[in-house]
Picture 1 (cartoon, rainbow, N blue to C red):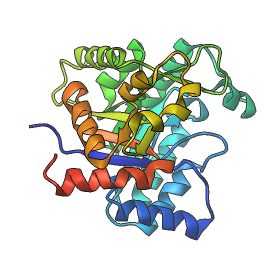
Picture 2: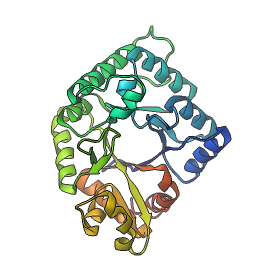
Picture 3: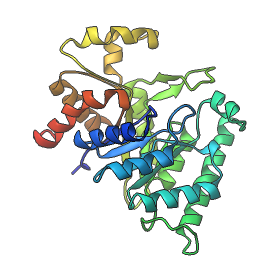
Picture 4: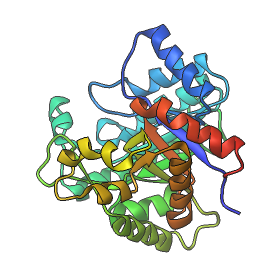
Length: 299
């Protein structure tokens, strides 16, 4: 039997306290399982935002999606993780990756490094976090034992191997950084390319005692009865792709509630994704699909 579906909402826009809490309560009302916060300059600081989300909600898990390892020292990060897990009642899920926007590192006065250097730093960060948080002497103490669940996001072979070795959740963006981009602009990959990346991860993970949960970040959700017309405004953002090819991308969900529900089920069947993350602007648009999958017998 496949894992049950989980759905996360990635909150991108900062807001004053009560407005932020209201957004989080709305996410809970709509049935989202995880409230997530990214780690980009110009967006909410993840850990205080998650503590505020916990105060406003009861059921959802709370996660970073994903921390930029280059922003963090492992010892300081361990303190943040343990404190946040304790303050949220053991609801934290820690998502982490290498970071991919050179401009953000430069704005923060931090080295960006080569792809290999960033993966090396991420590995050291994960291994040191595991050591620190597993120690009975570490203060503060995280609420969850044996550890806070770990999500690792990436596409390259070294990242997939790292996720296979350490992660409870392996996250796929369905995209790559555009060549030459310093701002982190992403270019979607084809369905076949994503299938190959998932298969590569599964090969690395063959020796695991338990398989990881597989996550996909969905970039676009559009409720419509005219799928081709709905994606016309997107074509300028993906030069070289036709409307049909955009509709076929794993990171786009376009159509009626029934059609999008079928697309979600197809992604589970083809790739094994049971945990989908959607972006905040599509929180309301995706909610009927959650309801359908939970209450309509489609899951």
